[in-house]
Length: 512
Image (cartoon, rainbow, N blue to C red; front, side, top):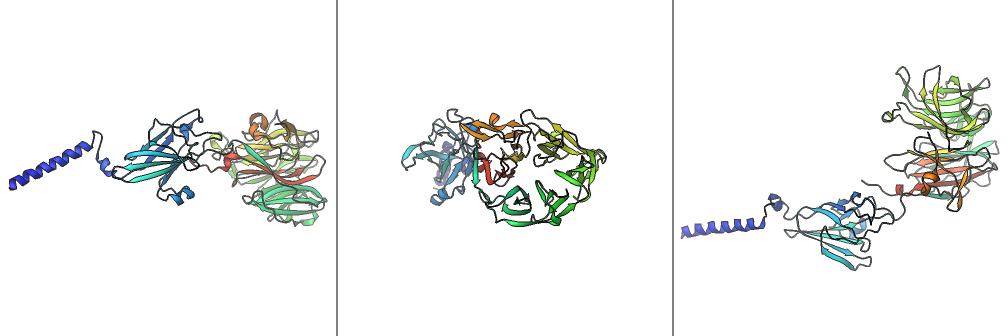
C-alpha cells in the first residue's frame, strides 16, 4: 500500500511538471511567473503616415500609469492610466488612419475601444499593430490589458492636436490711450527688477511715472501716475533712460549731468564732471589685455571741448574719458543698448554691447549696428566695430527686443521696431491687403537685419501696432510676450497705448 502511494505521488508530480511545461514555450522564463498578474504599457508611439502629418513617429508619448495628468479623466476613472503626447501634433492634423506601436509587460490580451464625441462605440477590436485607428473620428480611445492572472489595466489614449497655428505671432492692441488729459512732451519705459516704470514729461517742465509688474496681468495693470522729483532743477532726457545695477540712469537736459534713481521717483546727480550726451550700456566683467578681470562698467558718450568721446565708469561717479568717437558713430537716437554674455563656444570671450541706428554729430541718420567687446587698454578705450546694413534705412528712435522662437534658445531672435527715417516717417509696407509697420529681425545679434515679412510672413501681420517711433520694447521671459509701450507720431504727438505679440507655440506647455 505504501509503495502504491509513493508511486502515485511521483506520478502526480510528473503530471504537474508536464502540465507546466505545456504552458511555456521555448522563449518563456521565470519572468512569466513574475509578471503573471502584471499588465502595463511600457512604450507607445505612432507609426509614420505622411498623409496625417510629417514625422508622426517622432512625437513622444508619456505613459501616466496613475492618471494624474488629467483631472477630469482621473475623477471619473481613478484607477485608469493616461497615454498622451505632451507636444501636440501640428494645427490642422486629422489623427485618423493611424497605426500604433505598443510594448507591454506581458498581458494575456489587449483590446481597444474608441468612442465618438456622443459616447457611441465606434471601434472595438483586439489590438493589432496592423490595424489603423481613428482618433479624430472617435476622440475617446481606451486600451485595456488583461494579465494572465486575470488582472486588468485600462488606459485613456489622448492624441493631442494644436487648436491654433503654432508658428504664428499673434499681435494685439492691448490698451487704448492710458494717459489722457496730459500735455506729454516725452516718455519712456524701463525697469527696476521686475517693476516697469512708465515715465512721462509734461509740458517740458515736470515728470510723472506709473508702475506695473512684468508677468502679471494681460495686458499689464498700471498704477495711477505719481510725481517724480528731480534734484537741482535738472530735466531728464528720457530717451537716454537705462537700468544699471538696480538703479535707473538718464542724462540731464539742462546741464548734461548724469542723473540716477534707486526707486524711479526720486532722482539725484550721479556725476557732473562732464557734459554727458548718451549712455552706451553696461560692459560686463571681462579680462583686459593683461589677463586681469575688470569690474562691470557703464559706458557713455561725453562732450569735451566740442568733441565727443567714449567714457567708462565702474561706479557711475568717477569717469575715465578715452578716445574721440568716429565721425560715423551715432551720438543720439540709437536703440537701447543690448548686452550679450561671453560665449566661448562661439569664439567671443567677452560680453558684448550692441546699438543700431541713430544720428551722428553732423546730423546724419545711420543704419549700422555697432558692437563693443570691451576696452583694449586705458589709453585706447573701447573696441567698437561697425556692421553696415544693406536692408535697413538710416533711422532715429528705433527699438529692439530680444525675442524667443524656441524656449531652448532664449533671446536669439531679435526684433527691431523702426524709428523715423530721413523722410520723417516710419517705414511701412502693404501685406494681406493692409498697411503695416515694417518690422526687422536678426538672428546674429544685430550683425545683419532683414525685413520680417520677407522671411517670416506668418509673423508680419502686425496691423494692431501703431505707426509710431521712439517706443519702449520689452520681452517678458515669464509669459514669452513682447510689448511695445507708447511712442511718438510723425507730427510730434505721443501715443500711450500698449501693443504686443506672442508666438503661439510659446503659449503651449512644452514637455519633453
